[in-house]
Image 1 (cartoon, helix red, strand yellow):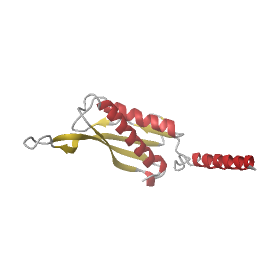
Image 2 (spheres, one colour; image 1 turned 90 degrees about the horizontal axis):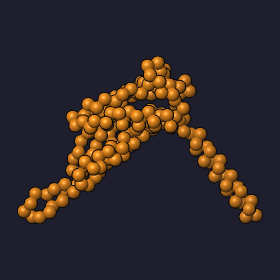
Image 3 (tube, helix red, strand yellow; image 1 turned 180 degrees about the horizontal axis):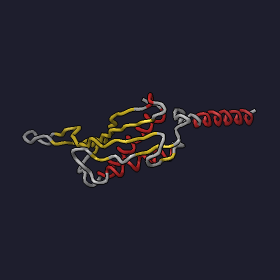
Image 4 (cartoon, one colour; image 1 turned 90 degrees about the vertical axis):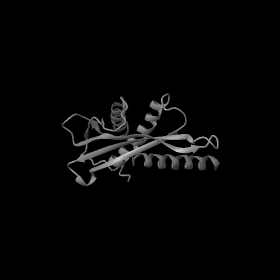
Length: 170
């Protein structure tokens, strides 16, 4: 009896997991097969040299790995374009070191904002143009940790952009 119950539980879990997997990319229209992901130029007031390349490639990799779409140049069913419009570092918590000394930043926040335009001519109601911010808090000097912080934020933003364009998550 225990063996039969175990088989039923395992079978049920397998069916549930496989049905969840089939929901992936459920809102990508069947006619949408190719996308042109254009280079995201860095127009932020504070510029990091490799940020444009890092973001553009991360977005392409996410689309390649999590959808059935092919990335092409020029002739495509849809286009994704935009630019990096914000790169800021601001204090998020203040620490008072002594009563007669000005307080200093205990932690800072790096925020990156990317403006994205998605155009699919066959179904204009899924088109959008929107800013996608991402941030991470950090302590200490940014110099030694900047590239790791950028990677974390780029992962957040590419997930948000992907979900907005292809998973219909608002």
